[in-house]
Amino acid sequence: MKVAVVSPYALDSPGGVQNQVIEIAARLGEHGIESWVVGPGRTGPAGARLLGPGISIPANGSLAPICLKPSVMRRVRESVEGADVIHLHEPLLPLVGWSLLRSAEVPTVGTFHADPSSLVRSIYRRLRPVASRLLSKLSVVTAVSEVAASAVRPLVPQITIIPNAIDTATSRSEIRRLAHRVTFLGRDEPRKGLDLLLSAWPAIKQSAPEAELDIMGTDRSDLIPGVRFLGRVDEIEKREALAAASIFVAPNLGGESFGITLLEGMAAGCAVVASDLPAFTAVGGSAATYFPTGNATELELAIVGLLQDVTRRESASEAAIRRSEDFDWATVLPAYIHTYELARRGH
Image (cartoon, rainbow, N blue to C red; front, side, top):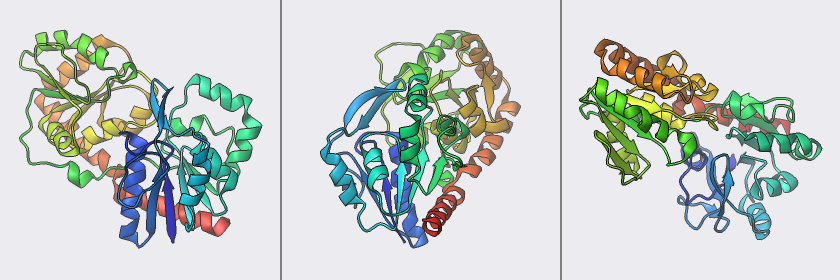
């Protein structure tokens, strides 16, 4: 079987969807399946079939690097030639998804990742006949979570939930964990909740004077006692920072459909404090500590409670590791392969 794994987002821009696309394609070879990545961008993984540069447009409180040049419609069709199955991520995003949904002649699996904004959900409702017609071309529809599935359930009769995945083994490290180290990972966007965490930090520091906060993914010039801005980090630096932390904080304010950073913190053995967003509670289960989204006081109490209770913190660390194993590639990838086989049988 040959599988083309297609991203609508530029492969040379960092992002959760791009990472999952690249990982799926790379790991299929371990199961004897030939695969390649297709997506916008000037650079990509070895063997990728590139569609040209993307353009960033505002979407869901962030910037989405997609391709809007009409020529991409021809190029994406050419890039999937030879595939027995197409695995198309975010099927309704222009222009990559639209082109394949209109023209694909082989079984196609579609995967939804995002928690669409209220505006996008409104557009889906208004354009329901068109969207339903496009999505009817998919042989199998999946979503990474119930949140991601919710917006398109009125358009699709059946959606299979297959979560995002990580390699839990590479998340482990022998680095010494620091009892009062707290860490955050995310882009400097309002919905990621960094400002909420920083507003709670002085009170946290007052209650736990030894507390330290490492912030990955963001680089600010602010001088805040006990806070280090590490900026953008590579995979090795990220794993080391997570392994050294006792607590991982996900103070996000909304717009999350899964929570891959939450999962990375859990796999590294951090005790996790997270907003009570549905996407986060679905990933963390009973292994995380939640606080009401946007509530700085409750965030402070949750962090301080773990900092001051070593037994509870160690128990939360062990629970996080166990929970993360449910999202390992060894479990998730076979589920996708099963959908490819279903698609081929039903086409």
